[in-house]
Length: 113
Length: 110
Picture 1 (tube, chains in turn yellow, orange):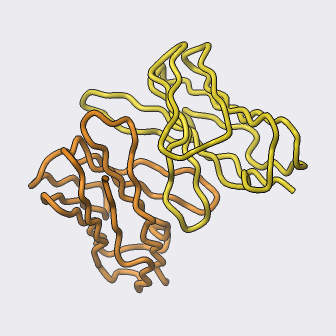
Picture 2: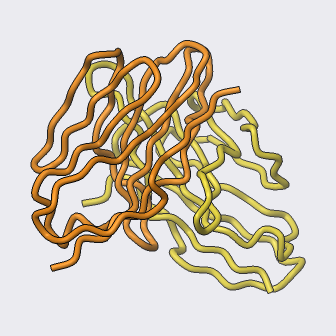
């Protein structure tokens, strides 16, 4: 039972196309994140948000952009896709307090050809 | 710089054969250490958060422990459905980023 939803699950797209990866959560979490994961490698933070109208870049250099207009929605956009953008993109949200954890979506597997 | 090293990279066990996975970490002020399970093609699934040395948490056949330098994930009498990649991550105070290890790929053979 997923509380954080990512679409599409898989995407194959040509070089130069603009794409938006969707992420929505129903838990009312303020903090949301985008991580990038290549096969057999660590997850790397590329963007995060503390809440509406707040966005920050993570450690991994990324040519993508994000927006946070609504609490539940945190889309990631690539203006011009390149083969180097081929990867798995994982969205997550977190809550603090006694149940502190990060909840991840199922991911979008992006292939740029 | 925060670092997480997981060992072994891969582990194959017979069903019922107990073992432990290791997560060694260096962090500038540990806020929390997390264990996740990840199945192929899916996002990480939360297992545990540990906050301070000496803490232990259990869930079914899994038990996580924490010292000042490492964490162990003990698997008791595993079943084939426990096969997955187990990820360890740390978060430092004042940092929104989770620093992940590369994971241990666990295979339980019936």
